[in-house]
Image (tube, rainbow, N blue to C red; front, side, top):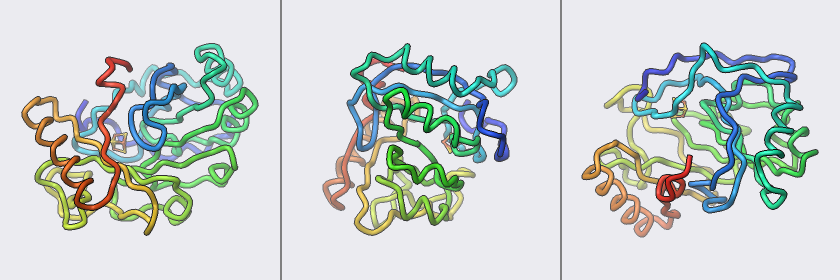
Length: 230
Ligand code: SF4
């Protein structure tokens, strides 16, 4: 897709049905839960359009599913030993999550929200929810900034600022506005940008390692790709 997704506005909704692209069981590839078995719920649509975005979804045909069906499917797909549900997208906070999060909790899951951080809902403050933010814009919502368990950044050669974090905008190739910086003291995770070019990818991995060593961040790779998992 690479930056061709339709920009979708926030859908307030009543929280009883959500548009879902896919639900699957895999290993968490990045961030504080990297390597841990997780149930993934990919919600449809994003309010941003990053020029290098490779997320796949189909706005036309993705179904709106009742939240209890989503939670039950999640539990059926994942063995009882999987206690983590990752809500991702797209931008998952675009749709109303106040029904889904307690439903997942009722089925034995802790939820991790993977967000770009521009949107907020009060249900994200629940004690069984972790927020992992990967900023794509110069500003993120103050509640996300204050509450995120971890900040994640995609590293790409040619786009690294003096602090080791992305120096350019993500919404247009070459734009100058840097993405939002982490909360002081919060854990920061780096992963290499996948540019579908092995030479570029190798350089990006090297940049992740060097940047982590220089600045004290945590280096990672997209583990699910290493293991050929979805
Ligand atoms: S915020 Fe994430 S899902 Fe949305 S366009 Fe950017 S990379 Fe893609």
